[in-house]
Amino acid sequence: MPNTSPVADSAGVVEQELALGEAAGYATVQPIGAVTVGQKGERLAELGAMATSRAKVRVFSDDGFCVWDPLIMRRALEYVKSFNGVIAQHAQDPRLTEGAQMNEGIVSAELGLTGWPAVAEESIIARDVLLAEHVGSRLHVCHLSTAGSVDIIRWAKKRGINVTAEVTPHHLLLTDELVRGYDARYKVNPPLRREEDVLAVREGLADGTIDIVATDHAPHPSENKACEWQQLRTEW
Ligand SMILES: [Zn+2]
Image 1 (cartoon, protein in one colour):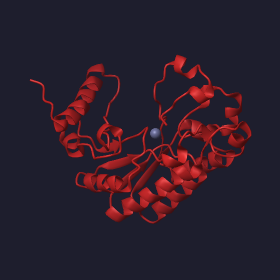
Image 2 (image 1 turned 60 degrees about the horizontal axis):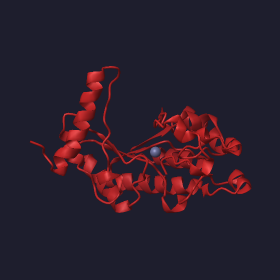
Image 3 (image 1 turned 90 degrees about the vertical axis):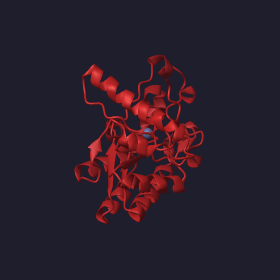
Image 4 (image 1 turned 180 degrees about the vertical axis):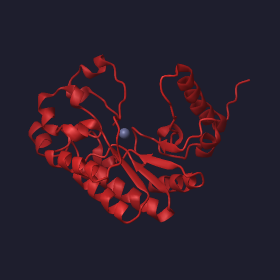
């Protein structure tokens, strides 16, 4: 008999994901739960049900979307404290990045493309490390990409805030100069940044401010990338 309660559903999905990983047997698959229902950012998902499921979910993220509402973020951080969980944030202020096509800077101005400013990432990270400190909970920052973000995480760690951070290989290696060729493979979110940012994330990784390199890989069929720059949707 199908169980249609939302509690059973969210636990059921993560358990199914765990089972599929076990059945395939190629790698350890650890499901991450959503923070909000449908990743819509409006109300908390059933974090407790996922935590107590067979998948024992400890990390929750709406990755692809930012948990933008500060009260929802606060509640999520408070909730996971009871089982030593982590909220992993995709730091992107949605209002500051509406219609964004690439990093906001000299190159975007020259190309006439709408920019995704560094402050849209940094303002969310700054807010969230302070919220994590306020409630005494654990925060993970997904794919940080700017020099300012590295500075904020460095400051937060020095202050004793329980935060970890990751960077992607492409943000360690590539800059927004590549957008000039309009090759849609370079359209990623967060966008490729400036040379100064690349140097800063490398320094952050070397000095331990950034804890881990993570690919942030999301499979897109190649036909979806074979289109004009403006038409390509990433995880905006
Ligand atoms: Zn993301």
